[in-house]
Image (cartoon, rainbow, N blue to C red; front, side):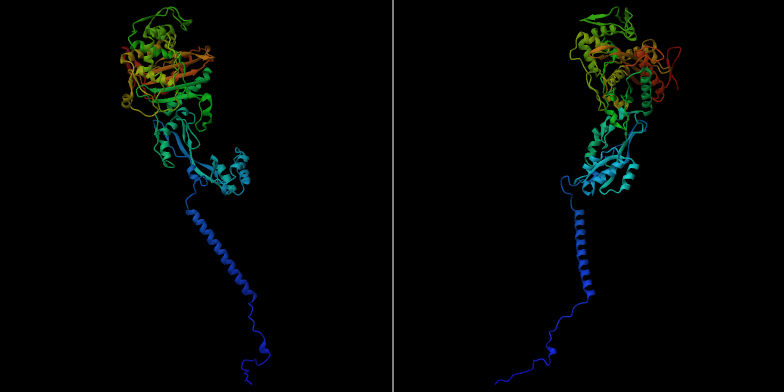
Length: 570
């Protein structure tokens, strides 16, 4: 029998119990769970931070999902200043309100809160605009500081403000039609403002420049003090004579610079919406009119320059001219033979028509083309009308054009052509920017001889001295000029009681410096009496303008000595 060993048997029953692991205490388990939770949160936090950093450095996605609000800010513009440095237009800083719909938590609440401050905005429309994933939408441009403060206090998420440029015109209406206007993006849409954009500013903006930079000012030829006088006298004339509209211009006869130009009714460029109304038309450059007897100035110039008549000739004005069912008569006819100067100072339609017939239809058209009346004026203003030229140039047309009917032109064209009649015969394109005589001579065209110009100065002076322009006289300033009373076309026929009156003046006639043209639309008889023709309303309006502006324009008073020599006061 084999031998058995008992070395590995337990010594007692208690030793046969299984050996178990010791359980942890409750406090230790809690600490373990906290550590695990903190680790999970830390990891999640690190993931979020990493994603935010990656979003911050990544390129914006293509398309409309990303919009830089700063790219929508209105661009900078240069100041516009008058010839003496007075500010006519400038940029000012203003707040504009925008939204980021993708960041707006509650579009309904946001719309309600915002329209509670901006009461002119429709709540439903704003709610629709603030709903969606768009990155940027304008809510309202150019809000007031008070509105900005109220909206800021609302604390609406996804709503912000941008400081941008707004155009400000210190003079308000004073030079509205010259300066023009800008849109909400500060882009020129009319007048010199548009001219500046078209010439260079728009290209600068397109290249990404001039968005906050200070630009050199643009100087104009306008004298704001003279501009104020012209507008003020036109406004007074409209009230005094019950006119429905008025316009006026002062032009440097030797440089073509426009010193002042106004057209009423006008508008405030700070609130440019009114500029769209039909009666806000710039009548001086953007309206074409049959201007009546002031056009006789050019009939006389062509007749004298062509040698058809001389200052010593006489014209038969004994009876009306009847041709092809038309009758040409004089308003206050003398019905006798008139000298050439008498035809001018009595404003004879009969005499003027006979002079035009003597020049001939082809010759008449050639001179009118030479004066620029068949073409659109080339100048800095965008708002320039084309002349309305008769399609058929008959014998009747030639006669009626001779005294300012059948051909419609802009008053600006007439002022420019008149300057050529008094400055020695040079037609100089008009400009609203500064120009010296040397530069003007370089672009001038000789349209009549210096001798013809001398004769025209004589006729203009005689007309104010003893003709229809007597009420345009200003003591000491030697004014010359021509009246024009044109019957307006109503329903295809010339009206007997609706007139467009004008006066075309130059001063001083011994050394012509400036051309002044005033136009009154449908003036009535003044309350203190008088007539309704241009000599009673347009002429005295020109007189008032010259009386107030001559000194500002640097023209010194004149006196005539016993020997007839004109003396200039020191």
